[in-house]
Amino acid sequence: MRKSLFLLMLCTSLASAAEGPETLTGRSQAKARKVIDSAVAAIGGRDALQGIETLKLQLQGETWPRLQMPTPSPPFEPGQFQESLVLDLKDNRLSLEQRVSGAGFDGHNTVVIKGGEGNAYDHRARTVTPIPAEQTTQQQFVQYYRRLPNLILRQALDGANSLRYLGDDQFNGRKHNVVTFVMPDTQQVALYVDASTALVSKYELVFTDPLRGQSASEIIFSDYASAGKLKVPQTWTWRLAGDVVARYKVNAQFNAGGLDKAFEIADAGFSKVSALPLTLKPSVEKLADGVYVIHNVAGQNQNTMAVEFKDYILAVEAPGTSEGPIASSSASRKRFLESRFATSPSHITMATISEACAASSPKAQPSLRPAAIATSLRQWPQPLRTIGCRKIPANPSSCSLMAAGASLPMANRLSS
Image 1 (spheres, rainbow, N blue to C red):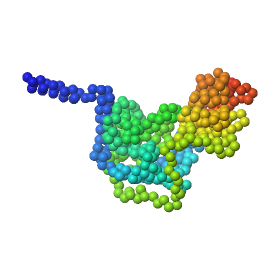
Image 2: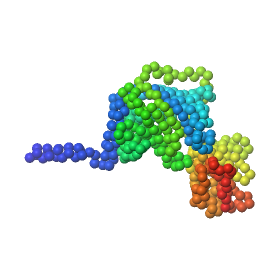
Image 3: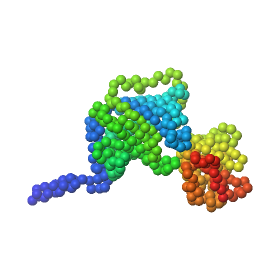
Image 4: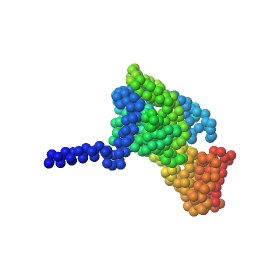
């Protein structure tokens, strides 16, 4: 009797286990794992992926830096880009050389990381900057371990416990299964796996765009071809907040020999400069009377130019976040006692407008309150490029909002 009861309980337990995870999280992880397993099989198999010890990758193509093109409207003239990347996954080494030209940018840089530290070489300035060990795991370097879906799937297998199934979605007119997982550098990514071919079509990250708010950065893989036992995309496209900003052709070699020389750079003729600190301290630099640069207040490695005029102060900065202009505006008030003008080229937020007007005139008229301003600005045909508030000497209790659109022949003013 006892033996029969034991067998009955055992069978019941096995049947329950066969039904799968009992929680939503467990079911989501199990389904995501099936999607990843199918993607691994389609791209060449687990053994082939785990057998990658080195990767030599060449990218070459065109770039269209978002909101930084020489002309305000399309068609944009593209810049040129070349990248040579060598990854030694076995010994944890990275060699990266990039050349950019056109579209307002020119550069030639090489980064070598080995033994837990590295150097960054600027071939134009002829300088070499050390990369301390604590900086080698920053996003600016770790992102290169996501250059190909083959590398991403390896990491997905290693981080299987964080896999989650998000659902199915349409991409380029085809059904895709979408899974997400956390990579070793704590970056969460979403993979789009083609439901028919099981190949990875893209991965995407969510970031805060200064112009559009929460947006997606998408790396799109297409035109797969065989490279030994593995399949590799031949076209690599980057889409940022809906805009294509780069498109490259791909040449990949796995486990190629003779790569050691890529990690040896002769630094003769390069001037050594100090390593960048992990945290840049806020500071104010005086360039001339009434002209200052506010460093690292709007954000790390972000600078604001503040110029004092008779009736107002002009603060100009590159795109960042809504909080950045507010912080730099506060720093300007501390420096000049009163901040009367705040600008932010290439992006505009109601928080920026509200802060700028409040700094200039706490009793701004209703027509200049954020809701009224937003209504007026929606009538403009193009995104604004500059924005600010100016105190009107004849009427200290009022505030003038000035802005310029890329398609407008002259500055426009909304005033109370």
